[in-house]
Image: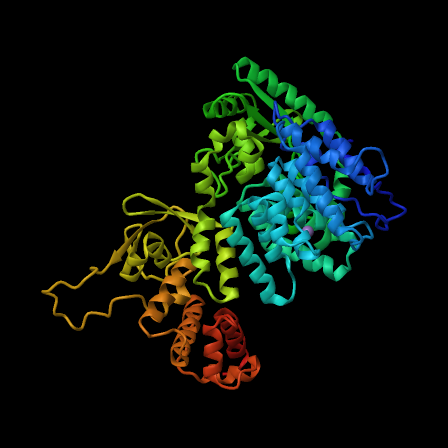
Length: 626
Ligand code: MN
């Protein structure tokens, strides 16, 4: 099957501008072969057959539905247990018999598709068995105990994980609790998360059967948490398709415009073939063995960089990927060959090999002016880098023979954020606070600052010296009294920037016997810091410090003080100040608060942001005649 066929389903015609009755669907990640490697054991023809078979479900042919699944699985894992998959399928089919999906299909088509997605990703037999059974305990009379005795404890643990957090979407808290469970279970076995992502992908693929409001709700939830999770785990192969489905659900117009752009884009294939031939010749001269292929951007990525950024039309540059056979240094040799032949576009070179992204993505990126003065984007990486950038955390399931190149150390490094998040989540009793922590851990915008000893520390954008202090240790945080930013003394509220050198100044840990200065400030953090920090662990350590000392940030008096400090800070950031409470009192009816204390407590509890209060305040003051 031609993976690009979806792009020509819509034929633009000037006389019939109405949208097509059937919106084209995003390409299936497995048929795109985007992650296919030289020597990859997944034959593309099997995916093509799988695609066609899936279109024919429910089946009527002699070929039973599990055969495709087993074939995909065995193509990647020759010793995969087909008999076990068959047994799991028949149990699931029996249990779900009589149940229907919203689309009217037999329910079993769903777990089977989820298992197929896991197989396409290259997951192991255990994951596939759990995927086939993932909804049985929740939706049928099958019990966890029966499942455990039938399929073993590994499968039971994974299904249990999915079951617990799959009782979804009953109000805001239920949803957050669901996500919290997902993270906890993923900390024990990351395969839980893979099934959850595959489950969501299939639900997104079949979203058309749902009402418009459900479509939007599910797509938003996918965008809010699951896609950032998928990105953080580095499973780009899956993320691309999820991205495109979300775009289709949330911005049908933007989606249609990108599809339309694909249909109008002429000569791309021919141009790419020419440039690939030229790059091949160039690399041959330098004796660099490499596989060069076109590398299409996915729809969402084009939309985000153009339409979403206010650009009148979707647009993308031709892009190729060079996967070198040799070691890392061959990437730089290939880069040299490309830059030697074509002029690089200034400012477009990025070295993600020397500085990997936070999901361990590594590659060289450059843009050169190719023949016909057309700019071409070039990605350069080794096979090992390619495996990791396509499959991230699950690369060692798909490529067990290469597990050494993505061994326990790399995996532990990639999951460090997850385990740190798990440490905090135990203490974060408030679901909203947990979601904050998760969003922060998944945040794309990150900076690297250096301690005075030259140690690099990764922090979220807009972090302050207090965040750095707590990252260096709870003790350093509690004793922090000041900071030097690039050699200059700065307030603790200063915002850190990428590349800053930050020295944290601390008071001595314990007073020595000669220290009789009773006027010294009380040791420990200040309650105002809660408004200054960006990282959840800093916030947690600070609030814990206060609750340990029975000076809880939860008393009304404390919250009033906290709210006032937050408003003061927000005003200072806008270079304003308050001479009295009068303007705030006048603001109360506009914001719907009965008295000032209630407003300040609401600010302290994050029910209304200090910024929102200050914006309304400034608008009010500025429109009042003097
Ligand atoms: Mn499901």
